[in-house]
Amino acid sequence: MAAATTSMSTTTTATRTRSAGTDARRTPLASPTTEPKINPLDKELADKKITSPSVAATASSATTPTPATTAPSKLSNATSQLKEAAEANDEPPASEDVIDEDTFAQILELEEDDGSYDFSLGMTQAYLTQAKDTFKEMDEALGRKDLKRLSELGHFLKGSSAALGVSKVHHSCEYMQNYGKCKNATGAKAISEDVALARITTLLGRVKTEFDEAEIYLKEWYEEHGASL
Image (cartoon, rainbow, N blue to C red):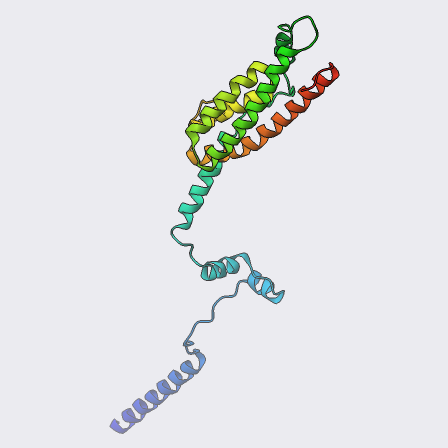
């Protein structure tokens, strides 16, 4: 009886061993590394040699160098200067008239009746000489970045231009007077010295052209009326 029991135990153990072996063969072993899931869209784009947005973003962030910490500051300063320059450029539209005819007509009314135009002619000649000398002084002051002097010269030429009716030069010189005080064209807002100098540099070139137009106009007017300027 003991021998039979021992035989049955041995048989049961053997059966369990074979069963465990069978289960082991049926259960696949875990792979050392897990295979990553492939995004079907990424695979399709890869087959077409096109990088998906997600992959491109990852690659870009990995390869793009980090900007220097000073870059945002420089960009901010440049943007601020451009904005300030744009705000400073608020000059009212220039007059289309080279000469204010009403003002010039009032000067002509002071002439003698002999038709010589001596009074207005002398006044005009003095103005033309004065303006050319003033432009030379403006060039020198601009070279020194002397805003105070530029403002004074603008004020000076503004007055004599207005007296003769040289309207464009009159208005431009008024803007120069304001820029020299680090104000915008109308004098309503403050601007930096750099912006003021930049505006005067542009303005000075323009006002010289406006003066040339006025000189041609006046010379032609006097020639048409039998006088020489």
